[in-house]
Length: 219
Ligand SMILES: C[S@@+](CC[C@H](N)C(=O)[O-])C[C@H]1O[C@@H](n2cnc3c(N)ncnc32)[C@H](O)[C@@H]1O
Image 1 (tube, rainbow, N blue to C red):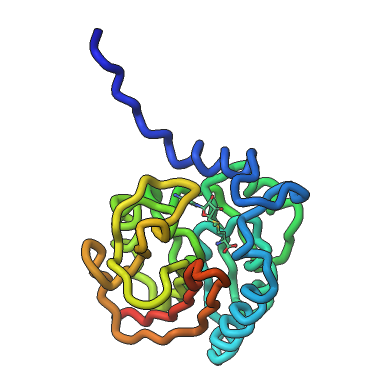
Image 2 (cartoon, rainbow, N blue to C red):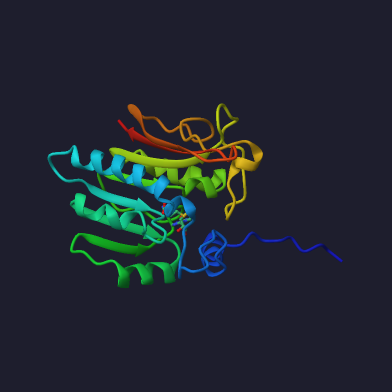
């Protein structure tokens, strides 16, 4: 009998299951995007750095948050921007966010940032999302990033030097076990930028890598 070829799960179902089963932890929460979105030692310095950047502009920026998750991060940023568009692929998470977080300049949209067209904005926030995606999926996203002036990218990567962009299957895990992490400037993504600046770094205990936030300015 011919062996059945296993079809990979659609990314929408994968992410929905992560939230349904609390695979990123936080059993006491309805939706939980992981400790990286909740530990104040990680989130406070991140928010301070991003707010300082947003406030450094005379004209407030239009921001698009790709993979906004449970919005424990984004909810602190909306008052510093002209418009905040928060996108995620998990439908019931977006519905929940819409009821919990309301502001005149805030919009939530259920959207697949890999396949769908992204709205225009001055600045992209992409925080601990690419690290969970396969190279094929990341490539589709990075191709769209060149259209945005600023990209604030946060990735969980190994300590010290590492072989970038080893491939994984999109899902709960990241490349750390393979001693790898995402570097959008390296192959196969080769994102071209004019300028880059590290906004922050949090080193995790027990050599579990570091969470690094970089501001990229494109051409
Ligand atoms: C680890 S969470 C990070 C959430 C948020 N950025 C933060 O830092 O708190 C990753 C998020 O990316 C979302 N995501 C993954 N793939 C996506 C896709 N193709 N389109 C939209 N959102 C996606 C997941 O549903 C999840 O909410």
